[in-house]
Length: 456
Image (tube, rainbow, N blue to C red; front, side, top):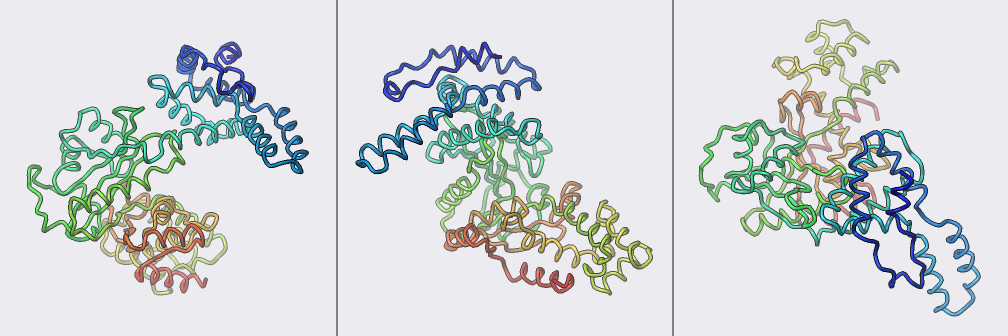
């Protein structure tokens, strides 16, 4: 590893020769890429750790320039600016040159996206949390953010006539509602449906982020009608039946682009596309899953049971109904029965149990989305994404996703985040700056019920 790095990572040119030093031969970038790909997965973090540690910033030179900058503060502005520029240049890690040169060879950008995915996996596993590795990740993220800025992306509509390779990847990358077969995929890119993707010239044939849209008369309140309906595949669209656009799935396809804001811009571009195609359209909304709700709920019930506060979550009448429906004794046994019930999908097959649990789960879910926070922002990542975009938390939908996955993740509940286009800039600003969530009366009413029952 030492030999390959010493050979391919060129020294940082001096400040005076920075614009006159020829780039290293392309073979250096290709050699590094080939060597990296030849390593076993478990050996790659070691190479990245060494690259970040031994070929980073010259800290001694930075310290000297920082001291010089301090001494120059009383001199003329031109001198101060030149010292600042020297200091800025000295903060460039040596490996940044290698990353830049790799990006210019064929397949280089895709290689770096995948390399960052490896970096993120290493950091997530906590197998290497050194500040050098974190700095390498930050440098690479910054470069990718520049290379994948929205002005350099191309919006593509995916149809049944798109290249088979693209359609295959759209199917494989679908992370929200898995595509079952080619007939299912054909329906998702056919009449009353739209599928859009951002692509980049440096990664041909690779969709970066994919958005699926249903064109409907009203804002959908369940996913079954969108992804499981039996429709005539060759039917013509009736424009009079298209009043709303429902974003029912958005998937990032490249793990290495995590943190590079693409989804937000994709939704905005798609809205403009749809407005151009359907000038009368005024309703834009997501139909979003609620990942993490069920696990959060299990934790909450466990906590309340341990603290002896189970009675605070449900009304007295609701606890009685749960006792009767589960044939359990009052107290902790009923809490345990409720936890067990939610941990399976059996309750969804019983109208009685569904009726008992609907008001309970709906208000708990409303609180999870609206009231549970991380650093002041919505804990749920999907909620945080749409709220940052300026959407309104508009409607919770019962039995909106009755698939095993939907029941397991969110007790079958889904949520509409409504995009009121004139209000989205203000909503986004209020959320990002003041951490205030815009929500409808339905959501706020459910939150109020939760607070009243939980004595918050």
